[in-house]
Image (cartoon, rainbow, N blue to C red; front, side, top):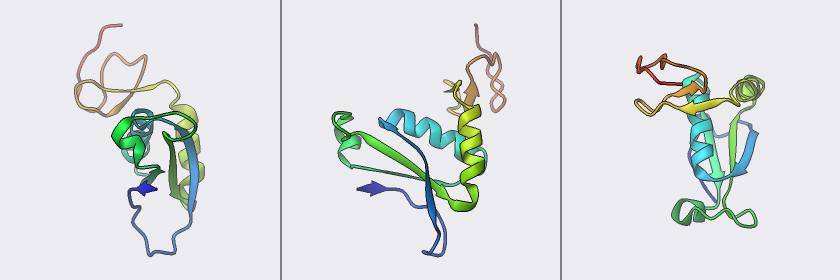
Length: 109
């Protein structure tokens, strides 16, 4: 399994808040959480990074956060179902946004 680290003392309890197939969606969700101040860890088979395989769970990615951030993370994810990545700065934005709140780029509907 490959992962990225969440800072802590080594005894930090991590809770799964999302599971899906594919690195692209996982990275978008990760950016939403981190943009809102929640550190997270992606965990899954390293094969997903090389081939992008999503067959029979090989591309499965889990997002883990500290136990104390889990409820807030779930609420953010529930509210962010309509989130996409700003093509200009890469920060998460709502699909209906016409202006990115981070970089002020303008979009057509």
